[in-house]
Image (cartoon, rainbow, N blue to C red; front, top):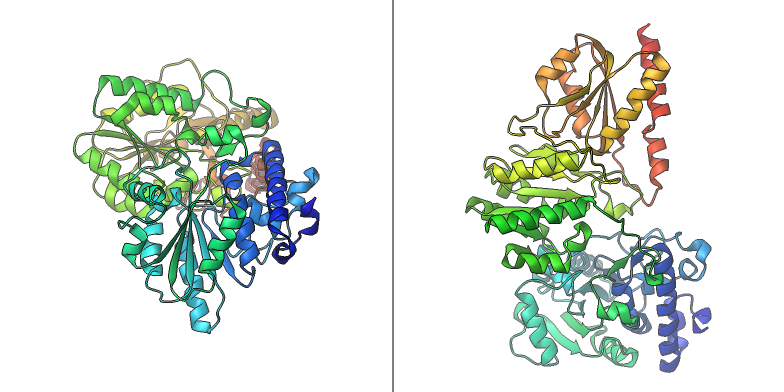
Length: 585
């Protein structure tokens, strides 16, 4: 294998173009095999293989600085920068993260997993270089899909006036995760169609020197293109046309489905659970409501597959669906304005990405009391990469005035919350879509959610009250049984339903027959739901134990290990209760 002779980027410079082409085939084969085994980003990495080889052939990393946008296309880069064993040895498939990571290599500058950040980061790197009087090249590699994000525009606007070396590589494969959305893509298409010669040029209008390369998957062409821009003394855009999923027919044909895959996908092993799940009942609900009411509109900021907004679903909705592109901030403000004008928007966002919208949630949405239905998916403690954690949405969302943040525990509660949210016009409503096992009680939920912050006692008991929020209500039921077995009495179990407030009457009544209150939440404790309960009881004799995640960035730590760390299993919770009981004796 040619790859046997390549351990670091300098090794590429000893190879011929023919050998580089063979290397590209080897790298592509490794990526396909590994990603099919572990899961991960497939299409973005396959499409950038040749450009990555050419980039490292021309530039001198780590002296020259490369900033990857999202970094979900960094697998070829990792293979060429000392980490190929994570792709060649199945036993070491998981030793490296799927994103850039400075602790792994000096060739990685930042931990990055969210989109549209590369140009801003590269602009800062270039400015620091200028202040220090150095002369290295600074590159930002950003996909066309990432250009829809607001920070990409801010970065381009400021990078254009640096008056020094900064090279923005636009990897244009005419795709985001799904199809691109927004007016910018008309200009990108025009530039592709005219081989970069159109007078109407977004990048030139900002002041960039501009170059176009139509053969982004041709190593020889890319080497020439990179040599053309290397050591430039002005802000420069190199716009390259590539094929997402290049080299794998199914990924080339169905770019959306093969953007990111589960293990075994290429072996035709289905990992999609059969029957109902929270995605299917959401899309069924929206389609039904949209037929009944033309004001219903579903919105996704470029991640429709994460919550089941399939192509078929989107086509059925037609004009009652908007993909805002990778622009969560815009999506929230857009939804707020829709609601103010009588529409009924349902905005679906992943927990990890809602962090990007704090100002819009606060100012555009909640300050204006716009009745938007906000669905937060994948909110939970998980073994995810540190860039995609779903543990911080409760502290973020539940502490904004006027927001109502709900935590259903089952299908029936979730559907009733959706119904109520669309019926009412007084509050912005967030619903933390249950994560994990699909649970249906078969009992219709008749709760009146307009009576805010009213908790539900599902089991009356004594001495200990267990408040299990959302996903962890079911853990609360398990803890209840364990308490009864170990201590000989039945505790009270409470489903709070609301994450944005407390049921003061209920909490006061608990003082009569209870000495300990336990809160369970599937997220970060600091600033979270349990702290609201602790704060309420702060000037009383009630002892409160909060169980949830520590305030930390975890990185691919198995969820069972995290549960052990956070005492989120029945034995450890009972041990903590035992300590309190002994202390009271």
